[in-house]
Length: 304
Image (cartoon, rainbow, N blue to C red; front, side, top):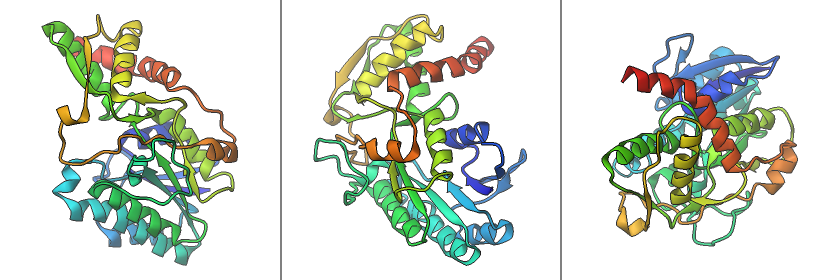
């Protein structure tokens, strides 16, 4: 099976490459290419079509995205180009070559107002530009027969730029200075490890089932809960000498250009059954991520 992967240098892309199943011929791409990767700019729909025509993959695994939620409010054209026009271009080209598309999407396609986990079949209602661009990308992908959408949220891992690694740095800095760390406590979702998400992605292109899938780790948390756990487990993993004091704050205390859903838990029960994957609690997944990150982060601290 030949798979064209986008976003290969991102945190999920790296996890997908590391866990590539036997028998998969992987064509990994990134915006700038290099280091064995093909260059593919997702903001260029012609380039997306050309990549499909050149390689005729069985699947395009579209893990690349414009994910700067706040900056999207001032760059709506670019966000839409990457998150909506690229999957539309892939779908158009794959319709001609006979390939299929797995489109990664987000909990931000929902408004967060219902206060209970969102099911895959529910109507989308995004709050901002980022969510709207991803919702448009879902619709474009699903126009291709055989395409699938996999929604997730609160993604983090041992590499890249994510909340977990940022919190480790802030815990270290604030613990050293004695200043507390304020983290939003009234937005609820579920942290999702790139390792478990990568497993779900590979399974999604290996088994048949629903066209829209939801995947996250198990449980629920606020950003405050997640930050406290990162501090506690960071100390246990030897990544922190001590954790900073974390204070819960409200969304209104930390205004951002983009509105965020206050409750974005995804109902993953049907998708887990379809994929045949057991959920892992987010705290257990966090412990594994911190263990995987330990060698890299410890080396960085010694170099600093």
